[in-house]
Length: 361
Image 1 (cartoon, rainbow, N blue to C red):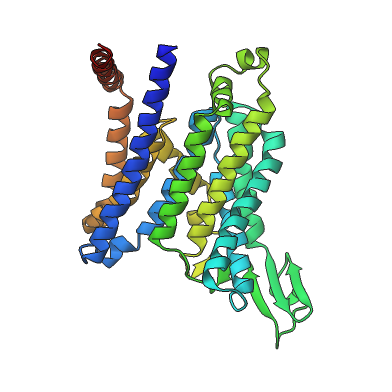
Image 2 (image 1 turned 120 degrees about the vertical axis):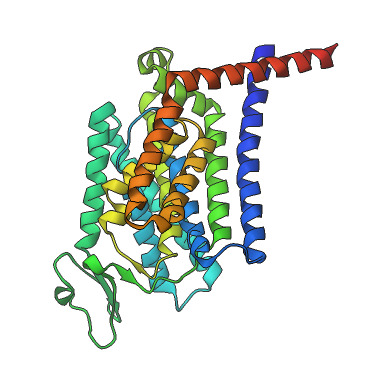
């Protein structure tokens, strides 16, 4: 019983440290902005950093906690981005900014969660490389469908075409094109800011960490550790896998909504919602430590800022970025560094145990 309380206390302290880190970073950035010490280039990166941190937390739920490999997370982000941008573009003249943006974020999260449910039912019957291939295919399918989609609105309602804008039957005088195929959505309200991004990231952390520490979270981790043993003690494998996958997809959809409202033109390009973007999110998770939400956030911040910090190196910028990434991976995953970290954790645990024993005396 004492061991159980010690572990729960340690988990609570780790979660508190994660929340505290995010809040301190928010306060520091706010101070730097209000004192004019943060240049416009860095201010422009604040919303993308919040988006990437939220995506890293979301993907870590699937990869680190559930133990499944997903390579299509950018697809859920794409769904949330275009659904929310579509809603905002249609209601920009009829709703106030705050309720419109709030509904857009919730709508992006819900629809992305629905897609996660529909994809998860067949996909989560697979494991390992097979699941990775299915999720990768989903991400590419979503991107290609959006690029072929034309939606317009006039007095007669909405018009949809998968060919070109001319075949929609749209009234050219009173109608307007909302989604214009590969050109995407233009004129989405610029509602995103750093404060909203911080709130979304904090909510994502609260949802994920509370799930991990709950009874459902322990069931999900038991599936990760040994799904045969988990099934033998009555854990519903499909239910818990689907729960983690849907929550992860919904958080990715909310991050996509934040991302969409930070762009003048939203396009489903490979650079924004393609395979490479999903791999980048996976790098955040692996580099920060699989299962570590705090590590994923730190990795997302560092790897987003690093290319901008190295911009003065011109053509050698991405080369240096790649070398730094490889070095960090080698150091963080080498047996010696991992043994050192485990020893450091053990020493901290023993010191805490001694202090608790002294307090008991």
